[in-house]
Length: 604
Ligand code: G6P
Image (cartoon, rainbow, N blue to C red; front, top):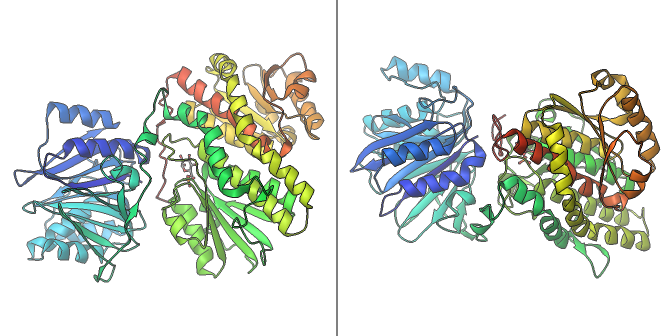
């Protein structure tokens, strides 16, 4: 998965291309490149590494031209290198691509047999050669694009410029998102609204199979069959301000601190505080006998938290599976199943494929998504938006807690609709959920203590996170966050399962973080904690005031606010995120863009 941008303007576009790539860096950041038509001729600059490397190249060797394309890469085919960085050229054509061309080996063999010489190891380069070959045989640019698209298998969002075409950028999408942005005397195509956000908030989201030609004034859009089509224009909320770091050092820090607001904004959509109940539109559970959650990464752990709460409160069976596994087996689904995809981006390839798999079998689908115009949001029967705002740090924080807010709201709504709880209990749950923004804000005040803890833990090679009940998925999420932010190996374990294996990892240098709210599982968790202490493991216990009063003297205690059990996942998310953030910062990792990761994983 990568980010792409294409611009036709009436002044030099290289600055705009780089600005857009900054917004797109969350999609990949192992190399970047831009190409323009400079005095009618193709020219490009590319660099391995973060975007700054390309910015440096362009500042020493500027690129002129009013028509251009740009790309930020997350390598799939071919190592991260300048040679494999996009744009790829062939003759008059330059191409940037997000996705994977699955039949590129066969296409490349054909092209090489007819004399084409390739310079990169990428799948993308075939696209440039195919368009060039079509142009050489007399096709007009759009025809050349269309005939190429017809032969591609796999997923793509493409932006293409052609030497001699000084008022044209072409684009196409299948499987990867692409938007058209409408400016004044300038036009854009880009991977998403953020890509074109610095220049316009007037957007068209292309449909699956669409291709497009933009010039300075307008866009011509065609469907997969080549018919000219109209697609709706949207005015998106101006997000330019939201994607700045403000006074924070990192987006991760900013997004952790935004959680009182992001949870509040999400709550406001799902909870009617006056009625004391979930909003009517949330979900009609009639005919739904089971939920099947599919998700990846952090969204999967949110789903697991949801499973515990929905089964407990609403009594609705919830199965949950990692999307990349679900899609490649034959899960047994009955007609009463509602599939719930959870995804910040709404574009994760595996989650999307799992959602489509269910749709194709006639099952109802819902998507809990933060990107409201994403492919999942458009394809699911029911959209349950999270309102966390743009999340830029590759590590998901505020989207995660917003997903949990939606899942708790669903649990309450399901419980009420199915008669599992009475009105008074519903009101109590709603009151408790409404406490979340305040308690998250209060929890953030422990940041200094966590920063000190991070100094002590930063040299660890391994760490264990333990928890029971909802704190078990939270332990796994804490471990994932730490791995991503600091490259420290970490595992999240069910506290009770520790004795069946992970306990062999305990020694006097492996820190153990125990999540232990003072609930009915507290004593059980304490027994496991003592098993660690008995083996000299250094323990940090995250608990509330009552738990702290009962903590063994050997452990370091971090006290978080005492919350209702219903929202403990939201409270305990904060110290876990702060531990990952501060250890990453102490170690000097680029926490917003850790190595090898990308925010939006649009490949399998
Ligand atoms: C990537 C990101 C994770 C994220 C996961 C799922 O792996 O690095 O932070 O949790 O994708 O992304 P989604 O957009 O579907 O929530």
